[in-house]
Length: 518
Image (cartoon, rainbow, N blue to C red; front, side, top):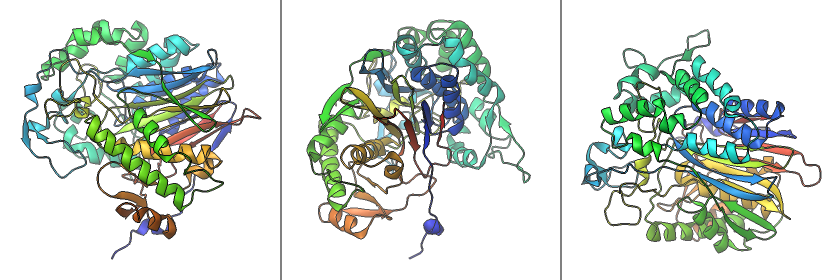
């Protein structure tokens, strides 16, 4: 049997430390957030600036055509909140447009096959985007800077264009088929002949202009966040959507509001875990940790009983999720980042376009790459999560803030669709139950339990761990490669109770992920 050449790699990554820290899947976006902290902004200001900037740096993951959730620890209020800016289907959406034509292809999506893949690609796959409303809501309630201040770095990046490198080439190659179907997407992301743009042999800097996104960011800054939903920008967005066949109207945009809601909060030992609840993966995280109980407690690196308990608890929690909630796990192209400041504010923020480059649609007038949030709905009728007008779907997002003794301890979350909850569960319990430091925890190989198929076990785990899991459930050894990532892509910031120092860490195998300190 052939072995991957990457078996010889031993990849490591250093944590970032300071009195204020931002960690993100794109290190340049993290630097944007850290600069906001240096200028006197708080963690919420930094998170909003990072969120806007990252849409111009890795638009296959997220952007202002997307959606998300964040969990915030407010130092002023000494408690946690969740900001919900998830997707909503159009009010006049017709479920009959999503006709089932087959049992489902052999790909990561577990739904039946839909006519023309309308829930996955193109204008019918787009849900009402909430990102701008969500970031604005968080800034208004918990931030300290003005909208124009946090927009400024993103404007500069969007006007400059996306810097091409090898990893971006990989992403463009994976998304090229869908991007080539839509004129504005093809013009922005691909060469005239449909090829993926390349770096020259001298490695000269090359930037890809993202359509009219820079001008749109400027309009959004000048007009304020409701310009996206009620102004001329909203009318341009709605006009492009309807011209492409989407059911989303100006009224859908005008009526969209992000919500500040109670998080799902529960105890595990001395820790209070605060996570987005409702239709997110938060309830599955809670159920998993309930099922695990004290089985993961110990000192130091996790052992075979730790992983066996994770595998069994996660497997049962997913069985309950799939049968009672109607959700099905899917891969996604999401981004997660964290921000924390010296005052005690913490933010765990997950935002997404859903699939790689979302729907594949870049709107011609605005340069906005749109989500394919309709893929989160079950296309089978008469189920809790079935496609319907004006409805919110289930999703796999899971941003967490953990407190101890009434003070914020760490914030964590991940991207990776169905792989998010397993990663967040393992890493959180390594910190809570095993007393590991965050840098060591992130270098620890993990398993993945996604509710369907065998338990995916990192081949670098000890044989004793593999045997302990295999004695309970079917397993398969997998590599933890760079692209596509073998496991989820988490980020975390931990506060030292004694010194107040913050330590941030990202997924070791993610080439762009990094952090920056105040």
